[in-house]
Length: 320
Length: 320
Image (cartoon, rainbow over all chains, first blue to last red; front, side, top):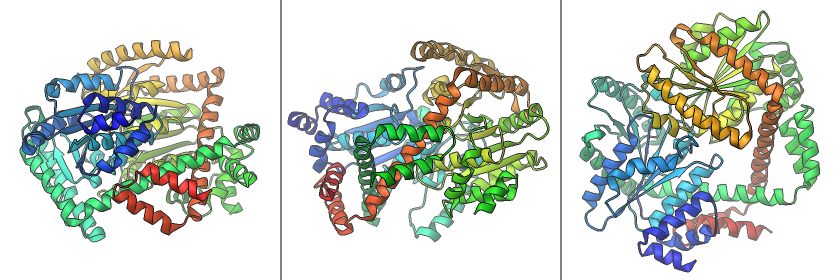
């Protein structure tokens, strides 16, 4: 066990890959290895990239990783985590890996990992966080986390990230949809990708209006001084990526200077501790549950004699 | 309190609207009212409608509600719940309500409610479930739940629904994206909307291939006999909606005949009881926590001396 943690510190990619597999499958003694690696973490800049399907996030992440690698110079190592809901139709994460491998497979300093969301809600967020932790300990910095979709999951993932890039593209539904998706409010940097499309200017204009409105709200609420930039990219040719990278590095600097980096860490770590406590308390309680009594109550719930809330109250009161 | 539950049973729309507002804001004694209403619930057919942004879900839901109302005849009442992530940019749910009101505002037998996801992850699923419960008690059947996006949230919402309709449309990113979104595997009925578009046939063909693959897997795993139909619609003119409605009603019948309705209920209700227990146990533990000790440990976590996992273990061990 000691050996694995040591090998990860020394940059052994195979050891890192095995640890992440254990994290993803929730198998083995990975938690002890993470505990051992923990003092080495906290350095990596975690960058979330999110947006609706079809916005071109994967392509953008590939360009951004390459540009960041160039700026950071020799010895820099970049981590990429792609969070895809699993699908029995495509083999899920595997296909994603193969698609994106074309770009970076030759670059030993970029480590790419796709995560399938096999587990329950919340499980994927924890596994992603632990994977980022493992990459951090192994010296990867920055770590890019790409999330697919426009639901709750990426709002959750965004809480892991120091910098959140929201990617939109023309023609993915109207502007109401973009606002609906609730993504704008989590953006530190807003990207309109596929800027080569004729409709891109309309998308940019309407997002600019929404941004202006949002800035006003944020200033009133938080006194925040970060001005969310809107960047146009054409990721298919990696155009606009230099501009985007400038903003990413500027945000990194802003986080450190403003103290937001520490606030972000405290929030994230408190959430983790709470999640672990919640699961552990429930686990202990469940282990000493009278299963027959529980089953009887569930029958009453099924027959609509008592509500789930009443069943939970009864179980909790009887225990004491 | 008694009075409100009575008024809801009698079909008072204002009383229902107020209860839902209390549920959504997690305020007041709504839980007691829900407990009281619980014996009246369990009748409504809950239909989830999900898919990526821009697929035309809202329009489709409107058409489907109108057609279902017609089939069910006089006295039938249809509920619609739209789950939108909140946004300070648009006023979130409010705008959605106004957009869709045009269609049904005159119809007193269709009750529409937009839910904003203000709370934590999981909070929106619970609020949606409770809202469906309230509508069920008030005699609304079926209840249509529309979710925006393609992330984890609608997979969660789908577990509330007896019948899940997944809506795709041509031109929303490639087929890999559709599979990635992990939506196909939760579909009971698959819809290709915007069938009037030239690219629709390509979308249909590729989805049919994926469906065939998925059916094989499902048959092997579960011995399921429901054959997922693929329906083409053009919701802007409510075309194809009669066909879709036939499939919805056929699935309803299938659920009852196969016993899947009860299985679905048991799963949903067990989840609710577990969720309530987890929150309640954590709440009790938190109430008797030594806050100073907790803060000290969090400082150690922040300084990367101990991991969140180690902090949680220490807190749990000290309590005993």
